[in-house]
Each structure stands twice: as C-alpha cells, then as structure tokens.
Length: 110
Ligand code: SF4
Ligand code: SF4
Image (cartoon, rainbow, N blue to C red; front, side, top):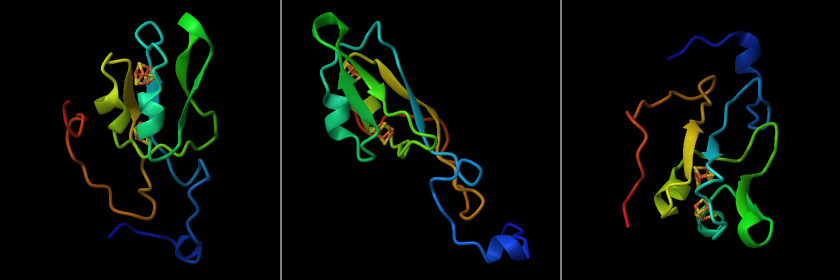
C-alpha cells in the first residue's frame, strides 16, 4: 500500500482536481477525421463533440481542466479512419493502485 500522509487520509478524493488526478486524453488527426460522429456516440465519458460543416466537420475533445475521458479506447476502436487515439491514460494513483496493462490497444476490432 502506498504511503499516505495524515492529511491525505483525511481528504475526500475529488476527480476534477488536476493536482490529484490525471484523466485520459485523446489526440485527433483532423486530416483523417471526417466528422462522422461515431466516436461521440460511443464515448462513455461524453468527452467528444463534432463541430463544423461539410469538409470542415471534425471531432474535438471537450476542453476541461480535467477531461472526463476514461482512456477506455472505445473511440479508437470505433473509428474506421484511424483518426483518434488515446495519448494520456487516466491516473488516480494517489488513491488507487494503478494496474499496468501493457501497450494500449483497441478493446476489439470490427
Ligand atoms: S469516429 Fe473517427 S472519423 Fe468519425 S468523428 Fe470520430 S475521429 Fe472523426
Ligand atoms: S478513450 Fe473512451 S472516454 Fe476517452 S474520449 Fe475515447 S471513448 Fe471517450
């Protein structure tokens, strides 16, 4: 068990404080993205949106200090154009043991 100070033990964890946790983050290649919105539909963290019209229609990540991204990789698995991938994995390591699951990979292939 990781060492926690008395102050840390008395503190209720919050998940919207950048100093306490790192949430997931994705990168979107707008040269590949066609704004189909599949990633937005599948995202359990409601972290993505599509904006623009026509050829300018693209997916974006909602800009928050701590995004609600779970780094689940569902968006990556869903995107047929290979335009989106997780580049930061969530880490609540101050309060939970981090399981190292190896290389990031889509949960399933279509
Ligand atoms: S699924 Fe892929 S191509 Fe479609 S909006 Fe998302 S990132 Fe863009
Ligand atoms: S990794 Fe999961 S939670 Fe994060 S943006 Fe993609 S689908 Fe949403």
